[in-house]
Length: 309
Image 1 (cartoon, one colour):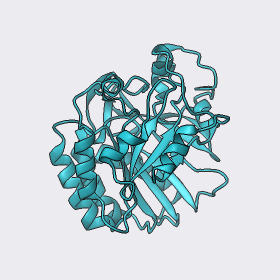
Image 2: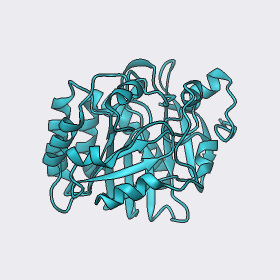
Image 3: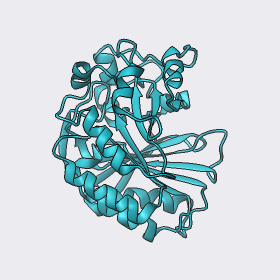
Image 4: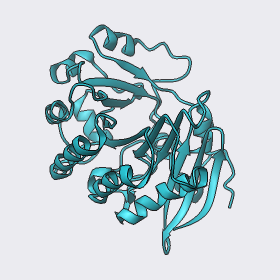
């Protein structure tokens, strides 16, 4: 792997652009969460595919696909960022998250499972917490069965599983995530099996646009508030969101009535806006710097930092 450029700020987030094979490029990210210091929380966001075949309406990393990354190609992204900060591979970070979420649906790549087995062996990282974020494609059942066994054997509750839901309107969800995927009953059944007392709750993530319904009563039919929590995030400023005229429901000044109603029904709710500077860097979920560079787009409040070689 050859890192060909980077963009960002050391005190917020850095996006790395790398040639992983001849003529094939990926991105990966490291970030912290001000005012927390790196020793308190450090997040690595890793690519698992060359592109992504899913093509979610607001994601710049989707719509093209050139194959899976190998175990070594995934590990080299992690290794690069760890060696930059902690050359001895001893990582004294209280919450050290590795998210398989930059580019690619992780359940399409079984090498992700091999990486998950290796992480706690390769690194001295007491705060390690992997995170799988998924749309739960149909046909990936074997991946998820193996994931459950790995979580039980290696991680003892320190594992985060997140399902991308985005709306409770099933027909609209099929447009937002245009592949065959698990329905709510299938996600709930797997989540009930995955969770055990003492684990982190399973996250149902809604990158919520203004016209996308999120109804608490529908969620309650399927998802136990003792097992599942709700995370509401903005639709980040991306080329795809702009092309599809998707306007975020969440912004720093919005009064979140939806979150209030969900809490009344017993759900733990996280409204996660994050650092707006990450949009300008291009490090947030759904953003993909290379697509921006190739399309010569201008999006207000996004992709404003210059790439440094």
